[in-house]
Length: 472
Image (cartoon, rainbow, N blue to C red; front, top):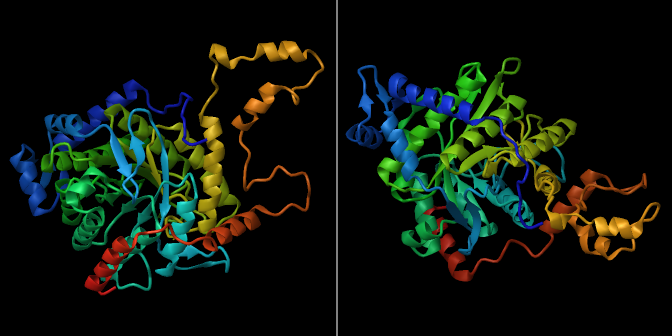
């Protein structure tokens, strides 16, 4: 199967609930207000009708929100490194998955245990992700332990460009490194105009719940919008910690925080590509961590996907991750549940595949296993076709009671419509190779293969020039 088809009716929010959440959101934005910093953002918002009160809160009217919802693009095309269309996000409700090219820690697939993530590991993660058909993008986040923090963002971005041919989702440690990455990408694409026409990257930034948009976040959003680089604005609300201990109220707060990013982006540049993100999770009161695997989290993501589909915007969600620190029974259970949940939902871009331990580490093994789980779930979410042409009663009539269908041409033509796993086993032998061994062998085969996807000499030289410029 070449794509993921969602033909099962599934929703968490009906139209009445969506309307109520939207109404409460507008009240929150217009009457309660938010803390907004950043000179350019504050000036632009107030010039365009937002009210900055004596209490320091910015209040945004419903008219500004509705105007932004109307002007934001409802379809978004993201490209790969070679300028080919890779992900088309629109009302057809396609879903795409992404993992990390770097993270704080790595679950080593061969040596075992968890260790600090190093620059050399970027090539490993990129090559694994590039080879998997259900991994469509990677996140370049700048967390390599052996690189100067001042240039981690740029270093990771360049390494990811070298070793990954698909779409890149990147974030930055600061505003300066964001500007560098845009300049690197523009040079790589042949110019900013060419990058805007065929973006092979999209940016990630976030506010700080509750209701706080620091200068660093608003300036990053401003720069992305003025350069017309697709970007995500994604609040991470933890019920009981940074949002109320209420699912419905947390959805409202999350919506208000994300819609602020939308309003700002459209004021900076009307029609700028915007991706709505939301992470409404829970604060675990026993461990005081934000859970990445709580059922409430993934129920809320599905709910937000319903809301954002109503708005007609691209939605960036989360799945395929775990609170466990390594690949074990807990992590496999959590990852499987989340993938099926998000594939039934209306989410478009799904990040954090293979991320474990509350987003502290990434496991190449889990990424490979998740790719297998996604492939199997495709056959579930495609639903059941029941058109007149889908019934084969003539074959039943031909075979009759007590017969079999093994020799029928109908079987030969259609048996590949069912899923045949590559890693999971249906063998009856008790001596079969374990799942972990199969996964590790697959990773080994990838890394011992032909290497990273080829990059032409001129583009490689361009990246090497940037490395010299940045003293990498």
